Length: 305
Image (tube, rainbow, N blue to C red; front, side, top):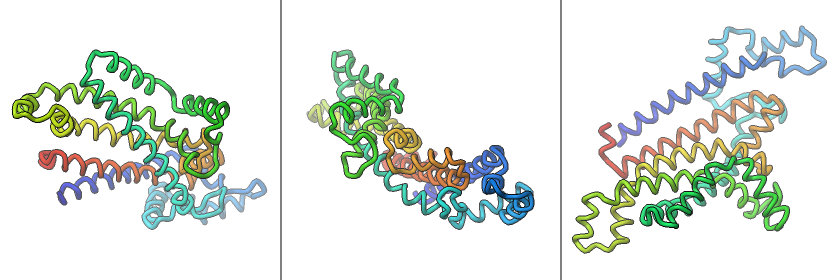
């Protein structure tokens, strides 16, 4: 287990290194970073002094090495808009985004697993058809469109929830539903197909022949054996939820890392954009490692791969 974990951590480090290279190159391709720091009243002499002070007059490989050295120490530079170190700004918003992501994932699981399971057990019934149509509709609706629709119905017309912003658990409901619907729909369809693959296996017939109850056969034997595809889907969905939070938080003015990213892009706040991208990338890599550990717990044969 320890060797497997070390191997996964080494791969995650290489991927994170690749993300830093992509972010660094994209930032330099988008224009001269030194010009973004200059005030409109600055002279050419001021511009040259600033380039030298920030290290932008050095060769790109040397700049990248300096960027990595500072990033390893948690220094992603100062925000141009907030005039503060970027990492504390990002970390202050991160709990709100993780709370929203966790709420969306819990909502998706509570709906997707029973829906997928019942659709598989009642294949070709009205329940199966209706459930899969509901899941398909959930995958077809764009996140921003669903968010606006929920605001119009439940916040503007019915006044059950705040339109945007605010404090308290009610502010979390509409963003979590918006973010969780797509994950729920995809997980429900994968749960159904995985369960259909397992339902007619010999070990289930053996369990029934031994007198094991039907629901015990389904929940203890069938569900466990179709868990790996479901866990794979959930791992991918967690990454999608973190990335999709950018749009959802912008629609609902939710004070998370996604809204901070949108503000950084609008203000061309390059250091803040770098800090957000690398923080989200590191969070997704960590989640993938945790999912890999769940794989090993569910099926120890994976250690040999």
